[in-house]
Image (cartoon, rainbow, N blue to C red; front, side, top):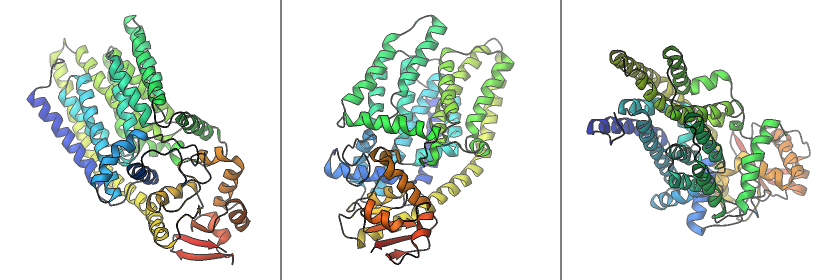
Length: 498
């Protein structure tokens, strides 16, 4: 197949692959009424605030965080794109789910188009997408209402554009990326990989491609409603948070910033491992000459795979780049077998058969794993949602409500915005507000600080508070007569500080 537009048969194959993958995503996205994962509630809240009030440089919902007076919406583009969805749907959670599904569907289309362009084979592209969807790590991240999907979209577009020397497209992707996610600076690395590989393969170096990409990142950061606050946000959340997590500064970050067990990583990312095994084994056996495109995509995907050793979240961008590397490699393998048409046909048939068998065999376990994973997340979210709705209906407005861990507040900000809280997202925001207060707050949550009452009254100046019952904080206050329970279940307690 050449570089011309796909035939009707090819379009039919690609459309079928997209529809099946999109249906898979749609089912899990709308199988429940609540959002998946806490950060999704924060993003829903910010989108709702933007719909109602426009841009704001302050985020008073976090009273002990740098976001309180120096706020920058680090995920601005996603919130702008989601505003129409929240306007159309009466239930903001349904609107956020629809926005997340739409972003995922766009990502699937971009993956299909890019895979087809690289592999020059509709069947190869059509098989890679559902194979990618059988990575439970990939699925869970794509189902969340978070900006990582947009980051993946612009990463793929920027790399493909840079390889083709489409400078304006690379600039646009970089610009939009800087509005979508704090990691837009990574495009400078990928642009450098593109040009270094180009130089090694052809002896030429397209400076303009790199410069246009860099200009897009810089322009997007500067031409931003939150400039220069966004520079501070990029610094503390994009650089300090992963560095502090890796060097163990004593701050309890989100689990995704740390690595998982090897067995869990393998089982949740089988497609990526299968693809890499196929590439390395066939390249070794057939002595396949790796093309420029394949080299770029292999280096890019392996970069994220290496980073995933330290942080589990990097598997999400690693998976699509690995699939695109496989698409580019398929063209290399086909070219290598041009003089052996019978062997080429046999390899194509056998590879497609193996992929199909792998896809069909992985559907049941992936389906069950996703259902169990999402059911676990929804069980985790349930007490927060219940508590937030009770506080909305029963607590007076304008109160600063203490919450025993930093991960509690996204639900409360979204569902009870009439009151304020302490911090949200990464604890780095509270740490930069005051390291001493952040450490005290963390010790309180873990149960290491015995004088809870004194801290609540004198440091956090709070009258109302929330805590789960399964943490150390609750054990230190459950028998204190100065703590007045207002509402409790088997899982949480909302109380008043007498």
